[in-house]
Structures are given as structure tokens and as C-alpha cells.
Length: 72
Image 1: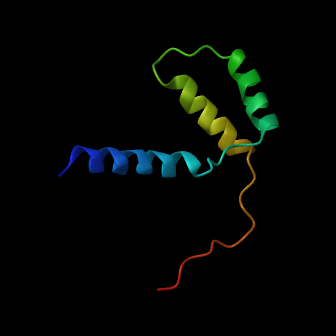
Image 2: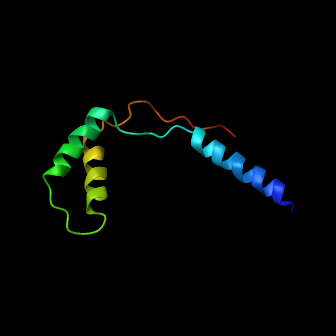
């Protein structure tokens, strides 16, 4: 396989990944969780990330629309 083909393929894959939108929590929920995290002491590696994930999940409403699937 030619190196140019591999390079073009990798660049195209990275471009496709960067174009897809990330699903994030609303800014006010993130700010609330960051403020709560400031007052907590984290002892172990990954505790802050777990706290933020749980806080955002607890304050984000569940989707109301039914998920759409492709028909094959």
C-alpha cells in the first residue's frame, strides 16, 4: 500500500471525526457542577471526572423524543 494513500485515508478519517458534533451538557449545568466540585476534596485518581459525570447526568433531563433507527 502506498504511503500517500494511507496518509490521505488517515486525514479523511480525522476530518470526519472532528466534524461530528459532540453532545455536551448545557453551559449552566456544567457551571453548576464545576462550582460543586470546587467544594469537594478528591483523593483518588479519576474521582473528579466521576463526580463531574455523575453531576451532569443527575442534572441533565432525559430526552423526550423517541430514538429513530434506520430501516434496513
